[in-house]
Image (cartoon, rainbow, N blue to C red; front, side, top):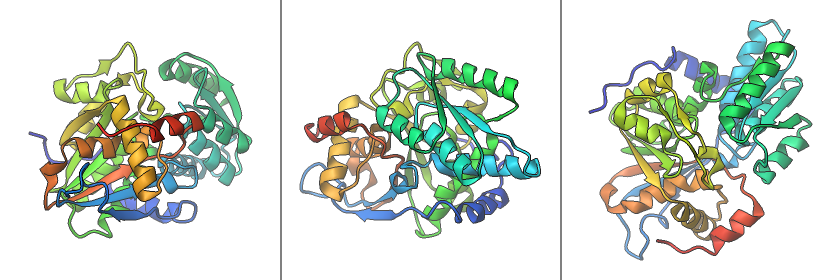
Length: 335
């Protein structure tokens, strides 16, 4: 049994609504698309009312810009405009978001990526004139290099999954959903560094306490799912999944505690299930999603009959996929 929603890192609805006002200036509200085509693998329908929250259509092709822009804007205002630059570590989407936000706020940005990053995401970061450093074989190692540079330079290190000022930004997604829908029975949320689910779950539970929050992870990168079951921090030896947005090895103790009070359950999806979901999104809804973005669709389709007569929102978190992986997905089949 999950305990009632509790404030996450000092998060309040007042802060969330303030973030919503700020973000309206730079992040257009993303579509909430009603879909009847993804309700069931066969021609029969589940009877669920299914909506896609298309964060993949945001200005950087990912939800990450919400948290990144809010965190940098807050820090710049706190310093009276004296912020000299921003740095971060990322597998791609968060780095892209930081580079985009820095550009909007007229700040230089340095983005640390693990070696051999997603080329589509790397290219988009480069287009924003941010400096890119490829170092480390996995994100946690890359993060240490970014932190060292931040200490030496005095630049602001926007740490995904750690910086509490990112949470009001991601929480605005739940506001956009529940300001439009009077009743939502479940929201499926991809889980990487946990900033997305902690923000969405907090605001959703405040606005509609009965809503069920379902976290979705790749089976090959299941640190938070395992931590949710045990109530303890978890470190994996590997998080080698095609969903680089979900490729996180460490579930930290503080985030695990917050999730325990906000999330109702976790579900795991396999690699081929994410590829099949990507294919469905393209062919049925003309929506392009990366594996992490399609993970919620994959999780819903595994137990589709469970939500007959219910209203369900699936967060499609990102669209920055390589051509090679997209072609692979289009050749896949539903399992």
